[in-house]
Length: 426
Image (cartoon, rainbow, N blue to C red; front, side):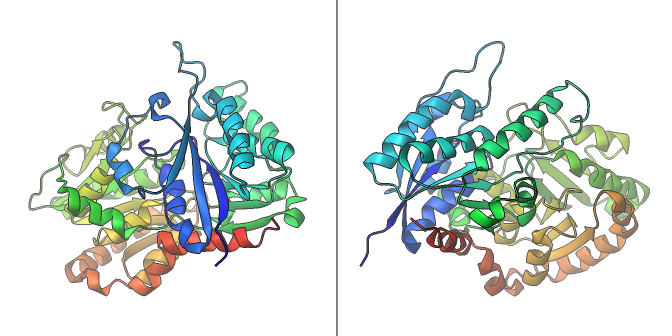
């Protein structure tokens, strides 16, 4: 039997980091050996992370997994450089080249963000001749609110991204993303990539074993207590372009308050920064429509991943709110289905999560056509809500189409990555 090929995954954040993106690398690394690829994960030692650590995440890693850790520059006061990919750039670069040579690595794979880590790819290729690929967990060149304001922080970030990205992808052999929309603009800006690159879109995959770990650890919810109301949980960061859809929903709820007297929406980890318990983002909108702590509750600070799953499983239903941007596909879709709770989702019609939820018969979806179609949300919210209540009353997790959903399991998604890797001349 031929030996596995070796893949170096450069992921500056990795468990015990509690950032959402670490699960992309974690699950790929977990399942790749089943498909003929032996991963080595190169990351930064957790002593240099800014975010709170989640050591329970380390209990999800295979014991035999090989992880290499480097040091980084400390965050200074005042905070001049925070990005871990910059603070550890030279340390990652040095160790990556050593590993490629010593371990006879066949391919280098770099999930981004950190976006600056992508610049390691061309350097490694130049020094060792080993090909590299970039996985777009988020778009790099991206216009945030405020990007058009000259000399603002977001303006500088956009200008820098536009300058650096072509350098990072110039000699790339593989470009992947959570959805095609995450990297399609890269191909348009760099048309030569269509000839030299293999591309592929793989969504975040769901991992049923993570939910089993919640039971094994006997974790219990602590942010809210079960009561006689219908409690829905939204867990995860709020994207800048998700606030307009949310405001449409809150406006309609305020007008139809009597229909929501026995309903609670709990927003978890939606704050301005990961570690600030007072960094409310949802509260001001809820107060604007007099819904705060009657219908809407927010816990801004990010909580550990397994604690998130615990609260999803303690809820009556899961609320998913997408973005006006077509490319955004929430990873929380798969956690929601695996929590075995009925899902209520408001998503851009082009999001791949729409199809996942509908085919799996996992809940109700209100889809809309983007920023110019926000009125659709307000106009259809009440009818969608009524359908959801009917769905909730009849919901049986055994009726969720697991066979269809298995196409989106972490193992199945990793197989798609392995199939792409196998197409690259090595």
